[in-house]
Length: 599
Image (cartoon, rainbow, N blue to C red; front, side):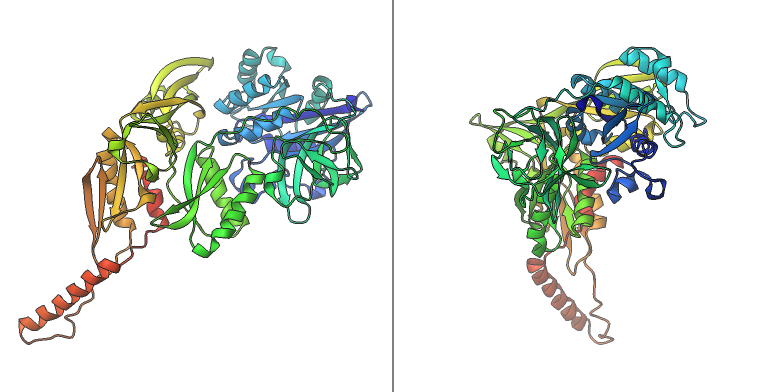
């Protein structure tokens, strides 16, 4: 039976047409009728449709009759293309035997194309190169075909040329999948094993695990065991994606489907776990996935303190759906109780913020993102801190190490100079360059992650008219002259506005932040002093002027002492107000730290 199964995924850079190709494959195989067809069928989240990117990997089964007359079962896993969701891609690749590499005929090979391709090659997948958007006037398919052939070997004429939107040559893609992607090697063995490559939470069916059955078979009637947590459950149902969830009586070796466990707690069914039979368990689990290391950290606080427990539940459910999200409780003097969350990147953080607000209807406040530092104490102890507020006193610290990244920028050669200038200004170090294609250069740099997370990507896109693409990997921790930049409002340090900055940037960043905060913090009934402090001294100060009530309005004529008396009375009241007055700091103030670079 498994001879007729083909498991494959689609990999590409953002916006090269993965989801559109998936739509056409579903239509061509009759999995979805023309009447039910919508754009981006597999992108079920509103966010995915709005932003035009895939965030979650999703699976679907298609039945296809090939030209040789045989019926095949094709299991497609659609993957994200954005660098922040590389973890989703790595999981999808482990569940497949083949990968369709989609390259945009107008854009050519980009950074994420290479990153995803190398991941697929490491997973020993059969690569089927496809050039998309050949019907656009600006397409240069011949050049792109030569670039792909040079990259992965083979002849340019063997690269399939399609237009997913117009439905050109989709049949050829399906035929090539049947011919070239090997069938799964799994056996209907005694000890069944299935790899959990994704999961989501359903209010009625509990935790639903997306599985690729590697060996044996599973039915809804027998009890299964989750090997990592050693929990036995009787599934509510097992089924396939067609493309909605459809229950079946049995999932056999090589097939992709789901197991509805009925579990109510998200920690019991982890992505990367192995499901086996409780009656006849396998001796060892399947190799899972590396756990992704969060790179960017930010505080998440409920605007209304009563929503704290709802926010915790929301994060717990999101973590089930997105295993790369990490969080731990934290307290801020300025904002109250919340969580310190770790993200794979800034785009990942933005998506999580929107999902919390939309899917769970919560008003949340995000602090400015920071990275994780290694702090070497005087006694030799090394602390890991992901919030500037946790940085110990200066006298106790020997050195602070920050994370550095290897970055690859692929760009048309015209923008070589402007990119060099931009990276060097952000403390980047030039390494080397390669030419993957004529008129395109791959520049390799090392750069501190703190410089990368601010608005590096936006600046890169605007300086290169959208043509440059970026990929990054963690390199190492390096010591540097870093110090804490603190913001004091009315003499009190606001921990959520603190930042760790390079010594040479402290003065101008402090000044720029104070100037910004002066406009953002609303006027009170008393003067509010905003100060920036770094290296043990105040480096900048501004006052938010008090709102004035005209107490002299009713005092017309008469002696000057009457006016002075009223003004003195007002001054005393303001002084008292200032002692007890609490300055409300709006959300924009926390994000102002981010916007400093773009000035």
